[in-house]
Each structure stands twice: as structure tokens, then as C-alpha cells.
Length: 296
Image 1: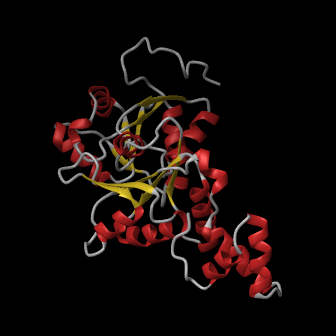
Image 2 (image 1 turned 180 degrees about the horizontal axis):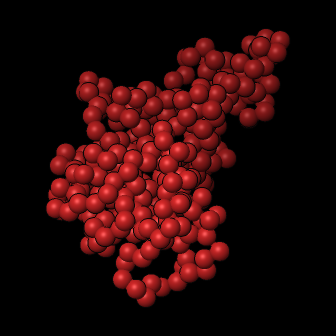
């Protein structure tokens, strides 16, 4: 195994048999670092998620290099070839469409395989939508959870939304513009309309926009608008001090429905859950019949 993975580099970059993980701009091409540009110009080849997007960088900074496509559709075929090229002495830069590779893309599989083959890994840090959105949001940033895109499968999605609703740490999500409105309504159902949230659109680009401060306000903002651009969402965690004083309406509805399906009457199930959660029976009953839209 190569023991120089974390050592300082004594020779000029790029070095042979090194996989460079290179951060690229998330919108504004001027955010590309001098070090990243040097790597791009001088590596043996660049493995990129979309060659067309990488060519925009090449055209902007007036250089040429060898490009190969590396994405979720061909990664399992391309990984062995890239590993062979690295073992033969080539230097390779790994880039995603935007931001840091390995975040929500197959780069992590390549890095894992390269490490298992004793190949030196060097990261050239750069822009990242996750941290850019977090520090721009004004929400607590010392501890946070990044979930990427939520799963499409209903059961997995509901489970994760429930976890987000009860989490006391800031949560960051990605979402496509066509699904944003649906996600916002799901977040309202699980977290309540008053939960603090910032939706950041087109980060670092000309039409960058930050929309907040709570879920109801953001839903209203997008109500009659067509959503466009790259979307990052930052959600504030619940107040830790009040965590035990609150209950989750969605979770209670789920439990109530389960008890009714198991054979209990609505009255008996409401009475049981009211006692269990130190609530009035009427609150549980009304929640089931959708007479309560928001419960703190």
C-alpha cells in the first residue's frame, strides 16, 4: 500500500499515478482555483461526469486535455480502466458537473477502489453547494446533516422526513425544480409551517436567490411561480430545549391509524394515545378528522 497518501508533495503537481479529486465551480466559473486549473492543464486525462460541462471550463480558460465520461451510467465499466491507467503511471483528475466530486455522484466508488489499490488520492478543494448554502442561510452551522436528494420510494421517503422533523441539527437537502413544491408541502406536513427554512436557488450565479424564513412563507413565494435552477434547501432543527415538550402530528396520525387498523375504535385509540402523550383526547380525535391543521 502506498504510504505517501497524506504526505506533502515534494515535486510539482500533477504527479504520476495520482488520482486528483478536483472541486469545480457550482455556477460562477471565476471560482475555479489556480491549483485546480494547473491540474486540469497538466494531468494525463480528466474523468468528468459530463464532458460538455467540463469543456465549458476548458473554453473559458483556453486549454485542452483528454476527457473521458465517468458518470452513474458507466462508472462500473470505467472504474477498472481508470485504475489501470493510474497503475500505469498516468495522473487523472476526477470532476463532477459542479462542486466537489463524490457528493451525490459515483466518484466515491472510484475513490474507494483507488484506495483499495494503494493509489494516492489528493483532493483539490473547491466550491460546494452544501457548505455554501449552509453558511449563507444564517441557520446553526456548527452541526449539520446532509441528506442529498430524498429517496423516491414512499416508505423510505416518509421515514427520512420523519427523522428530519425530529432532528435538532440543521438539515441540508438537494431537490430538482420540478419537485420542489411537492417537497415543501411534505416538509410542512412533517415539520409544521412555522419551521425555519431557507431555499437557495442558483448559488453563485447571476440570478442567485435566497427564499425564507419559514416553510409557509416559502410555499407562498413559489405558489404561482415556475421553479427554475439548481435548488439547495436548509432546514433548522427543532429547539432542543423544547424537544420533549412537542409532539409530532404526522407520527401521531400514523400511530392512530395503526391502532384503528388493529381493531381499536377511534375513541379508544384516541384515549390511549392521549394518555401516552399527556394530551387531551379531543386533540387526538380532531387531528384524525383533520380539524387541526397545525399543532405545536
